[in-house]
Length: 103
Image (cartoon, rainbow, N blue to C red; front, side, top):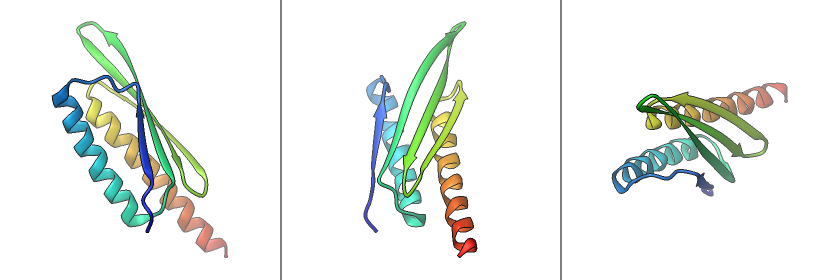
C-alpha cells in the first residue's frame, strides 16, 4: 500500500513539543495506512489565547478518493490533533464501507 504524506502548517512549536507531535503524527499515519490509502493529509493549527492558556484549533483535510474534513478545539494540542486524525479516519472508513455496500 503506497503511503501518503502529511503536511503540517502553522505549527510553531518548541523542540520538545515538536518531538511529541512528530511521534503522534507518525503513529496515526501508520494506523491510517493499515486501514486505507490516502494521498495527503493536511493539518492546520490556529491558536488563540484565553487568559493564561492557549486554545488550539486543529483543522484537518484528508485527500483520498474523496476529500474529508475534520476540526477540533482543545487546550491540549495533542488531544485536538488526535481527535482530528480519529475523525478523518472514521469518516473515510465509513465512506469506504458504505460504498462497498452499494455495489
